[in-house]
Amino acid sequence: MLLMRDIIRSMGYISVRSARRWLNLPSIEDAKRALQDLAKMSEDIELVYALTFERPGSLTVYTVEEVEESKLNEVKCKMERDGWRLKGIYLVGAKLRK
Image (cartoon, rainbow, N blue to C red; front, side):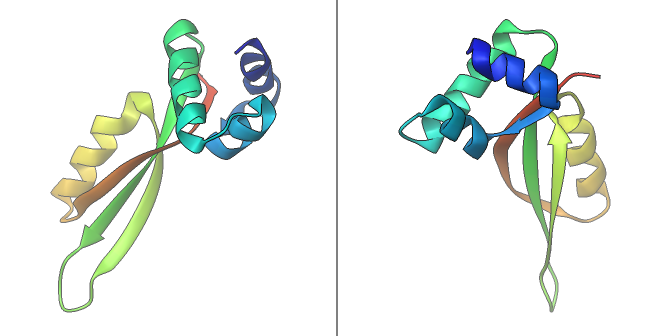
């Protein structure tokens, strides 16, 4: 955990896949849990999610937004007001809080 916190503090961001490699964890799910635990312990580290949206119509259009945890609801509501429908939320990494 301390290694991951030091990496985030020096680089500013770590992806789930990089966390898995750095910590030599067996699965992506273990890396996600480790990032979530670290975010709970450290106030200066924030989780980053990828939100997938679709706009239905004759041609379905998809978009992906990468969002910090603190702005998750704000972005989700804005996109839904603009006619986009939420398809999925995925944890993709952690970053230093600004």
